[in-house]
Image (cartoon, rainbow, N blue to C red; front, side, top):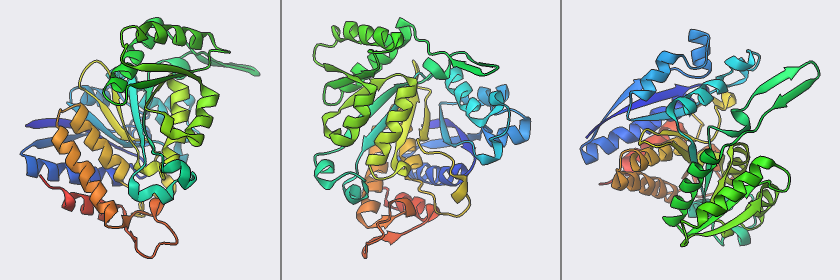
Length: 357
């Protein structure tokens, strides 16, 4: 099977971690008889330097003509002073909107080998951390009107019932495939958009009698994620809340460098990326952790290409490498006498070598 993959290497550590994901994908292709062809796409700071804008229409077109999109990371201090509508992050918003990927799914899972890396007490972590945050991705305050007039700035948060319903369905369907528990997170004691959100979610729940729906205010959810993460199975929430909560959730698992994500819409054309940033301070030093990027590639195989066995093989290879004691700098326990610290390239090589059919 041949699949066309648009590759956005991006900025900072993006190109480094992308190289390792491609290394692993090529090994999957060899083992399972697939061919992956890659088309490079410029987006982010590198596109600003080259074209004067973060995502030219021609580069977006390459993504839309592919079977799926892999993204490393974009942005960095170099582009902090460019105009607001030309910032690297604007390219990401344009990409999400152009692809119509309205559902961002971020798993928060603790690998058993990394329990000691979590900042939470062992008594909390040992209860288990394994939930998914389903975040609405192309609506809300990030896509509302933004303006500054004199000493006043405003940002508009807007949602329609249809936008809430379609992300709500993703939440219910995801929960149905897991532990059948869905927590809808909003701020309905303050915001009109959240009151509509809550109403739509309860109306939808009538179609999913097998899924237990609960409501939680976003500030309480932020506390509960660190107090008792084992209570969660699937969390569904709007764009800004999901952005913040998913970053919090990633840190309780030990490292933001371990967490992949998928962004999907109504087709199999998906956007897959690790949730961390471009980390320009460590770029080019071969110390970045490529596992989040590699696991994002595994999510692509599963959700866009229906290659479940191949995706499982990658996850098993990651498990085995961690089991052997190999760690990148961000997950290396300083007091360990048994773990072996490796760089970005070596970690990718080890995972590729562990792959088995």
